[in-house]
Image 1 (cartoon, one colour):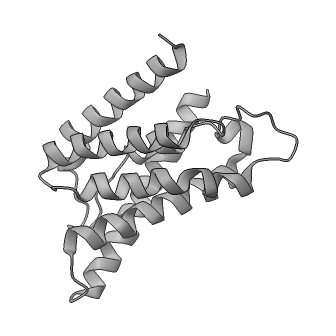
Image 2 (cartoon, rainbow, N blue to C red):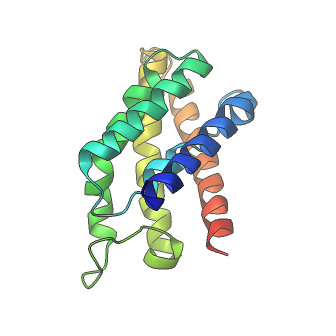
Length: 166
């Protein structure tokens, strides 16, 4: 087996277990829930096959949905995020980078990585909470959930990336 595949499998397991057993039980102010498993999609390198990213995202979403009682919400949102990840990453990559460019704070720089992570996190949360609420009747609650969860998730992603970088 490939070492990159084993690393991906380990991150898949760790982030899924952390979400299911710890992070799903955190609801700050009844609106903000950390959705750290998005970090898994953020770390795919530039030349990773698009179909591979989609499969990883879909399977992680299905497992999260199974344990979180959100049928299809995480799977659909994470698959959308996985489909957009290469296109969102492209503007942040330096021109003289290699084909197997791995996005991270050390390769992109802290401001660029923060923007990259913030954009994908916001896309994921808009899709997730739109599917979960399936109504725009209470727009204020919808915006609070998106804003709070995006901010909390982004902070956790930056902390994990900073610890991983050390």
